[in-house]
View 1 (cartoon, rainbow, N blue to C red):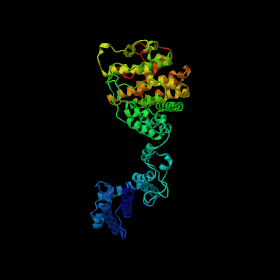
View 2 (cartoon, rainbow, N blue to C red; view 1 turned 45 degrees about the vertical axis):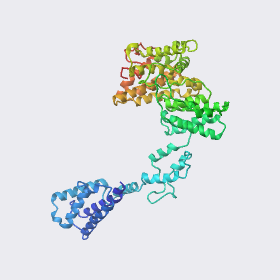
View 3 (cartoon, helix red, strand yellow; view 1 turned 90 degrees about the vertical axis):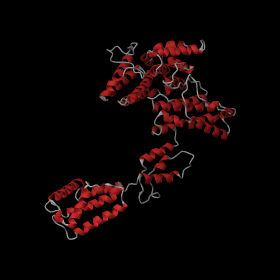
View 4 (cartoon, rainbow, N blue to C red; view 1 turned 135 degrees about the horizontal axis):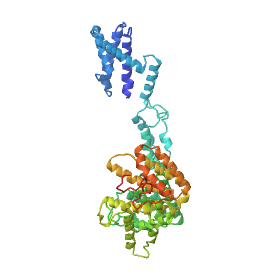
Length: 540
């Protein structure tokens, strides 16, 4: 582009100007000034000379391009103008007219303004030029630390850095700034706010840097804290595997060198309280920034480490894989479900999903055999999923059962809300979080491939479940306000989105109004509404 604007466009302008000198009564090649042919030959020679040096732009050599055609007519005019046919003259006139209509006549205000804009664009520094300035700035910073002052690194080019092709005041390219922000040493909340951390999965990647420091606080020796932090970060970045029959991978505390370091640990109330504060902060950031998404397993792993450092006992359950699910749940699933039952008994959440919370609370691993209680919990999930014992193994069957366990446990929402008292901290934002969930669901209702639609339906069900959870913590008047807003927002979407989500919203309105679903998850308004689930044979 720079070559085209700086080299070939000016030469093309001069070529057109020469032909305009020959126009008489709107016909070109009628008159030739005294030195016209010498000036034409100079342009042709200059083109040949420049083409040897500048060969990036291929357009000037293309036979059908106007610049190429005019150069051909120039040669004819120099050798023998009489050889120009009426068709040739007509073509030259057409080219000149198109040029003037688009660019303006040479010397006109339109022509000057257009060329000034192009010159400004051509003189802008390239991405590589700005990258060299950015590289020089970064080389002055410590290699093993993040960037504390991001504004100084991404500020416009100053006079000391300016070169001939990088004028002072040039701004750093957006794509370069995006990469530099990945090195920003700032609080997580600020990273999330500026889009550096765009999801819970990315949050889980950066969180070990903080978690390792929190877990190392109990070690008095500075070198031991550094060693623990390095081991922790390296261990968290290892590849994880999903195992069968509730088996687990090696945990950090299983490593013999970590066990040796634990003997030097002396946790106190201050370190426990700081770990609790970090846990509350990270959980709040994840829920407020990404309310539509369940907490990913990698992030749950870090939250679990913070729970241990804070001296708390919170049953945090992972998302299970439907393709390797063996039909059994660990004890923490039942504990999480019982916390949810105690918190959500009699709420919109219980009525919408048709949950027998009283039955959940009656399961007690302390008074009965633990395996028997967990078997009863798995049986309850199967009943709620409406699968038969003799149905046989399948991924879809497993998915329905796992989804019911997620509904019963609220996939960690209830456990975290109760343990960290988040209901009070987030009370003023519940309506906003619910609206954010619904907006996200509407944006994701796009028809793609079959596999993409399945993924979209599952993620939409996650967001819908979280939305219902947030709504369950609001009073009935605020819930009605949300439903009116959601109905209006849905009607603004395209037809396919309305067709997909209108039955689900009608079902939620039906339950909020005091109605109930039938055993198949349909409501009584002529089958117009239903319960939204991710694993179902019905197309959402």
